Image (cartoon, rainbow, N blue to C red; front, side, top):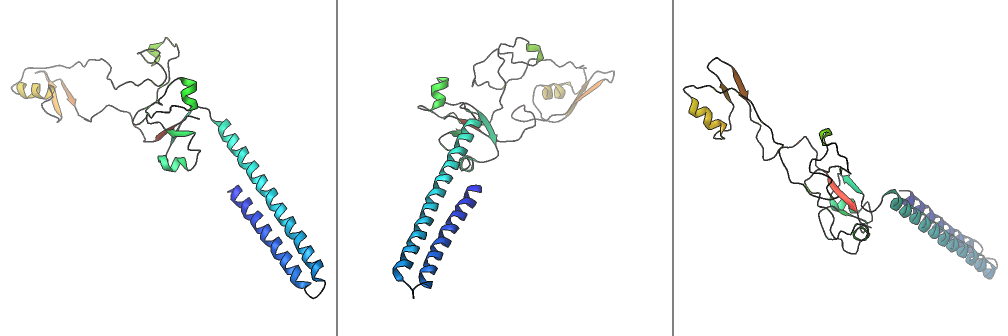
Length: 221
């Protein structure tokens, strides 16, 4: 917005200078035509010089902005965004940031620094902090160990057990069928003494926490 405003002001100043020069030339048309023409040329040249200087200032400002953008992030940085890939690229330098989709980035600074020719594929997955030699797995660290950066882990369910009382009843076969996965409806198991445990299914194709979908982008240059 600031660059657009600056460009508009520069263009306006140039047009005004040109119009002023033409107007002054017309005003003195009845006088010394050569003097009027020379004055107009001088003013026109001054306006052109001012325009060149303004363009130089704008380019310098653009260079500074680009430098600040590069310094604010480093190769390998990952950002999440609510923008689609094409929308994101209009806000960044497209040769620096790409969608983290596992693509090859041979020849990029990322490949040179990390030795990896492909970026990680972060589509549809969560990010997890590296253990970095942290031995205390009981504190929720990754029990798989100190995995390499960018290493993919498939989904898993921790080993566990469920304790429940099971009694012999006339509908024993139906209850057993449901326990073995024969039905996806709520059911009750219990002993003849009347102790019961109700199980309500919340079936899905995966086990997941609450989440919001975003795009991940990674800086490669």
